[in-house]
Image (cartoon, rainbow, N blue to C red; front, side, top):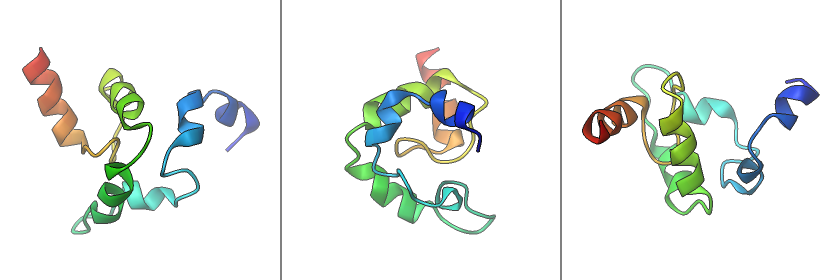
Amino acid sequence: MSLTGVMDRPRWQRRAACRGIPIKVFFPERGETFETAAALCADCPVKRECLAHALADPTLDGYWAGTSARDRRRMRRVAG
């Protein structure tokens, strides 16, 4: 990742429980679970900010703030 990519990240990500965790944890292969990601997200100090970020960008895939892309699509429909 370039320095520009790091600088463009929201400041709250610096306090995230997932900081430094391999990204593959949040993008498991078919048949794998989000179990490790869910455990990290459960007590994350920036879970609220992360969820707002993920809900604001419907192109984001993977596991964010304890939610899968499918969960977030459903949340957007309900809020709709």
